[in-house]
Image (cartoon, rainbow, N blue to C red; front, top):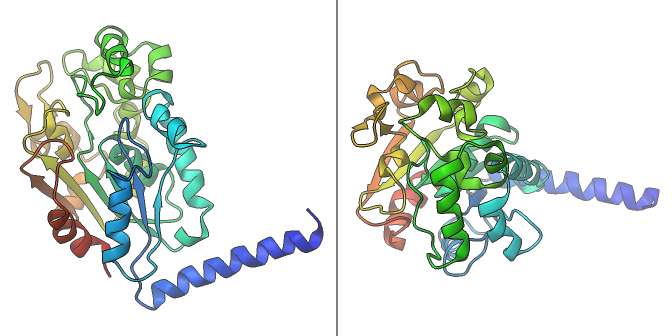
Length: 306
């Protein structure tokens, strides 16, 4: 690239940042970042493609919506949701977000299923540009203990994952190459989970206390968690509200507010709740089954408009 071309690119980058900032000053809705769940892709017209249309139709004119694609194609995006190390996916997402001038003044984030805990990791690890509101729709913030039913239940990948998780979830090679193992939380073998989980135990501050994780999460305006009351994919479904089994067994659920995790406030959730910024919503349906009316009334109108 010659010098003229180089400076032209710099000028365009600066201009886009100015325009993005001006849009916020003039009262436009902040941009939105989406992250899909297991077995889905950024722009599937039956899932996130439809969400993109809803947002663009119901927010301010020209509101920017970025649906994260991890990989160079839709096919790679789907495959990576099963087999690309979650920490590398979060690193990729942080890079995409930080390099996008349209997000430089801040953005709202909506994660669907595993995309929700991945976006929480973005909030904790990559605070610039700032995430404003984090909306978790069916996210598994305390992990799962039971392989969720795949969107494509007959797919050979799903059966392969079930077999591996039941036997070797915390083996190093499994943690490095199987996404669902990285948020597999065995309450009966809690020490194995804390020692072996490369992703979830880290972002939940269960190994060592990372003060930056707590400080960055506390920068959120709101953290909204949506649980599906008839969820058969997430086991236990209460993980969607950051609750989990009482230690040592897999029958009784301990509410978040009674857990050591909350009482010691190692991630800042207690402060968020006491300041009115932690919200628990429920939907009477199965995993990710919600109406457009509910989404607009409870999510878009309450948290995405300024």
